[in-house]
Image (cartoon, rainbow, N blue to C red; front, side, top):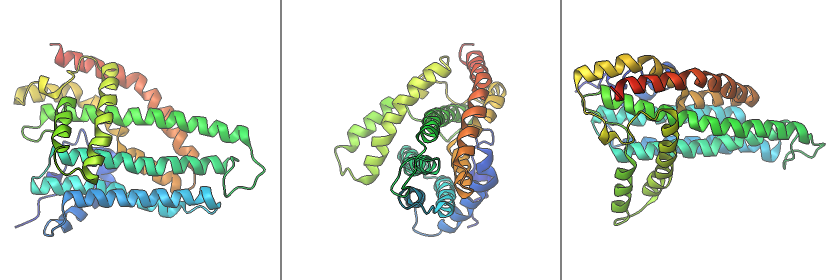
Amino acid sequence: MDAPSYRSTLKPLEVEEPVDLALHRPLGYLVARASLPTALTAEHLTFASMAAGLGAGAFAWVGFFTGDPWLRPAAALLVLSAVLDCADGQLARMRGTSSAYGRMLDGAVDLVVQLAVVPAAVAHLWWRHGGPSPGSPGPWRWEEALGWLALAVVTVATGGAHTTLYDHFKNVFLHHVQPRRREGDDLEDVELLHREALRGPYGLAERLRFGVYLPYLRRQEALVRWASPAVPRRFRDMDGYDPARAERYRALHRRTMRAWSFYGVGTHILGLALALWWDRVEWYLLGRLLPFNLALLVLIPAQRSASRAFFQR
């Protein structure tokens, strides 16, 4: 049997991140296609993505503790983590095995990778700008280091909001335009799955899925209430697929969705990897903080308008 085509492993192009289409997805397809005839599962690739991300974090911490940065191996492993993160979903779509559990694990691993790498990158930035560290005997430049640390904290907080909003509006878009595949989960449904999981073996995968995904959904719900209150709170309260309705939703949301596609995890990961490769984390912080947040001044009102036009018809 021929392997599924590359296009069949993609989501609608409006929701795909441009950096994923340019780099992560093509490489992920090669990994997924090679895995298809083997016993490897999408979950195996998800854990491999986590392992690569943890390795990237470990290399990024070296500079802080020793003063001898190993940022290029960290950058390479971070890109590998993003490729494997795409490959797991592509393999699941090839086999028709996509599930809520897989989505939860994938989202949890994304957060684990970011928790491994982002604090390490910030610590390296702190050391590079004069902050005390095991690899820095002094003299220390407190004002400069604290200034960059404050900038990093604001960037991380707003960056988390960016990826959360993109993820939700992507799932709402897919809910309306895809006739079969459903993505996005209601908080009540995941809480029910959690109670059911507690009755059986509760291993590492379950701890990752629910320990990360449930708090994430609660934060997402509050954030979306502010960003676009016209969107129904639950996916079950949205109408099912209908060709005419799908075309109307796509027409109203195509531009906003393409704008949101620059706010996803893949864009964030590649930007951070390039910053680590060139040892210019400052460039990443400024690029992530200023243009992306300024663009929200236009994107949030546009999203609210499109949502009102569709959901309050």
